[in-house]
Length: 326
Image 1 (cartoon, rainbow, N blue to C red):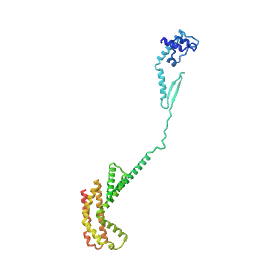
Image 2: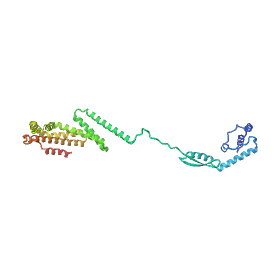
Image 3: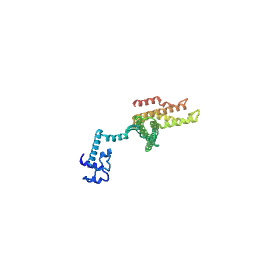
Image 4: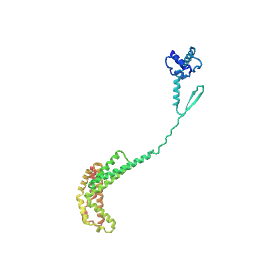
């Protein structure tokens, strides 16, 4: 130790009465307490004794002994601080044994409290979220249908409106099938598409065979309601003869025109071919019902114009030509 340190240490342990005296021997103001004196708590000398050389030597010896002890236990203060930090960071229900100043060991137990989080009242389950999503999809589906109907009303003729709906509904169905969308969402648009196809079939046949179709529908309804034993009086033979001759003359050209219309109306070829099959099949059914009315009315003796009736087998053979072409 230097002489300045001895003087500072000597001033630290002076009594209040001799403070000025000790301070007069120093060349500067008294310095703060040394770190070692604060840490190890060195006992100050009695206030009655005056500073002397022997006292100074005793203080130096004590400080040297403390330094030697500090060397024998290196890192003591660091271990104390690290231990305090470690004890604070112990997990739940961990135990440590700590040695007190009197040599006894205390068992310390550190515990931490567990925080239980309660679910919020506004938390939605997966089922509720799924139901809300399905409701939104159903609403959007109905809005799409309503939008298509409003756009279809912009067209001037009924056939053009139906064609517009068929093309758009068929496009939606194709996208659903490509994306493997199944269930009521797909079935809803498929049902709408089938309905519009049936309407188109009737519209297309009415453009070429409107008279025959109207006769079949009205006559069947009348015969069903009248219930007369002799239905010959209820049917005009001249009307039937006119219908037979018109059909025998124009039926092939009408089928060809239907084929051209279907190919030009629908962008999806497969969809168009399905509609063409339905139109030709429905035509064959109407003509078969027309022949049944003739047989029922003139059951015993058919009139002479019946020889101009086109056989259903001939019409079916013509339909098969278009089916093979497809």
